[in-house]
Amino acid sequence: MEASGNMINVNNNNTCNNKVVCFPTEGGNKRSIGHHIARRLVEIGVKDVFSVPGDFNLGLLDYLVAEADLNLIGCCNELNAGYGADGYARCKGVGACVVTFNVGGLSILNAIAGAYSEDLPVICIVGAPNSNDYGSQRIIHHSIGLSDFSEELRCFQPVTCHQAVVNNLEDAHELIDTAIATALRESKPVYISIASNLVSIPHHSFTDDPVPFYLTPKLTDESCLEIAVEATSQFLNKAVKPVMVGGPKLRMAKASDAFMRMVDASGYPFAVLPSAKGMVEEHHPNFIGTYWGQISTPFCAEILHSADAYLFAGPVFNDVITLGFSIPVQKEKAIVVLPNRVMIPNGPTIGCVSMKSFFEALATRLKRNTTAFDNYKRIHVRNGLPSNPNPKEKLRVNVLFMHIQNMLSRDTAVIAETGDTWFTCQKLKLPQGCGYECQMQYGSIGWSVGASLGYAQAAPHKRVIACVGDGSFQMTVQEVSTMLRCGQNCIIFLINNGGYCTETEIHDGPYNVIKNWDYAGLVEKIDNGEGKCWTTKVHCEEELTEAIKTAMERKKSCLCFIEVIVESNDTSKELIVLGTRLSAFNGRPPKDN
Image (cartoon, rainbow, N blue to C red; front, side):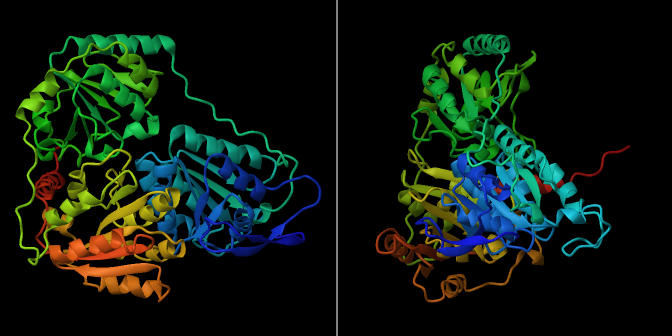
C-alpha cells in the first residue's frame, strides 16, 4: 500500500475481536476502491464480511476493518467463508466474502455454486495480482503456472450471474456497482476481482459523499399481469378441489407474504415442497405439510393427488424433490408461477409478470373454496408420538427430534444438514417466526457448519439449532472455532451414527464407514480452555433431556455441542425410500442409439 496512514482502533461490539489497522488517509476529498466497496456493502445491508486473508487482498481487508459499520470475520478456510456468506444471505438477504486470487477463489467456488443453486445474492470479492502483471507474460504465484490469469474467472462464470474484473481505475466504479446491483436484482452470486495495487489509490469517481446506490427494479407489464390473472382465476375458480404448493423460488421473488395473503383469501389448503420449508407460515390453519410424493407429510399427498387444480408457486422439480421424477403431478392441472412468468396449463406462458404482483392481484379475484381443506380435515389423523422408550435405553433419532421440536420458538432457527436430517427436520412443525434453512438443491455435505456461523451472525436475536451428521461435520468442523471467536451461542446436535448413512441407503460399501472421532472432546479442545462452549455426549433419552435443559438454561449464553450416539442403521423410512429411488434413477442403463 502507498501513502501514510493513521492508526485507527476499531472497537465494535459486533466484532469477533478488536483490531488496530493502518488505514490510508489520502489528502483531499478523493476516495478509493477500498472506501467505495466498504460503503457499498454497508448500504446494501451487509454488516459482516466473511474472509480469509491472502497477500492479494490484504489492502482491501484494511479498508473493511476500518469501516465502523462492518465487521470482518476471519474464517478457517475459504470454503467455510463461502458457506458463512451463504447462511448470512439466507437471513439478511445478501452476503459477502473476500478471498485471494486462485487458491482462495477456487477454494470458495463450491460454496458459491451452492449459493447460485439456492438463489442467494453473495458478493464474492477476490484480491487479484497487480494490474501491471495482466498481459505481461509474467508467471505469478498462486497461478497455475501460466501467464494468463483468466482461469479463475472462467471457473466462476457458470456459478455467478455477473463477473467484474477491475484492473484499472477509470471504470472501477461502474464495474463494482453494476456487479452488486446485478446480484441483488437476480438474487444470485457475483464475482468481483480487484487488482491488489488499485485498492488504495484515490480516484475522482469515488467521492466523500458517494452517488446513492440505485437498483433498477424488475417491472411488471400491466397488460401481461391482467392476462395472467384472468386466465388463472378462471382456471382455479371453476375447479372443485384446488390446492396451492409453495416452492423455493418464493425467496428470490420475495413473495412469501403475498402467497400467504392469497391463501387467506382463497381458503385453499396449501403445502410446501421440501426445499421451501421455512418460507411459508406453518402455523397457519390451512397448512397441510410437505409435499414430497410418496414420502409426503401424512395425508398431504392424498389431498394433492385428488385435487383437480393446483398452483405451484416457484417450484423446482429436481430428481430429489420428485423421488426420481416419479410424483404423479399432472401438467394439465397445474398453474406454475415462476419469479417473472406464469405458465397456464394447455395455454400460454406469460412473461413480464412478477410473482409478488401476480399473487397480490390474484388474491382479489379468487372465489373462496374450502372443499379440499374440508376433505383434509375429514381424513387427517394427528401424528402419534414415538413409542415410549425406557429413558435409559439407547437413543433413537425420532426421540431426539421429538425433544428438538419442544425447543423451537420464534427465537430459534433450525439449520438442517444434507442427508437424513433433511427428513427428520422436515417433520418439525415450525412455530411462528422460527427460522429454517437447508441446502436441498445443491446438497453439499458439511454446508451446515459454515451456514450456521453465517446465520447466527446475521440473527444474533435467534438461537441457531444445527443438526448435522458425523460425516458432514468432519468436512467443515474448523468453523466451530470461528463461532467461538464470535461468541455465538448455537446449539449443535452432532448425530454420530458412524458414517455416511445417506450414501449407504443409495449404494452400500466400505467407503461409507468413516473413522469415529471424539467429537465432543474435539470441540472442547478447539475452545482451548476459554470457557466459551459446553460439550457433552448422550446415549439415552434421560441424558438427552438433561443435556437440553442445561443448554437452554444454565449454558444458554455459550455454544453448546451435544454429541448424540445412535445406531448406524437408525435412519428414517423416508431416506430408505429416497435411497431406493435414487439408486434406480442413477443406475438406469444407457438409451439405445
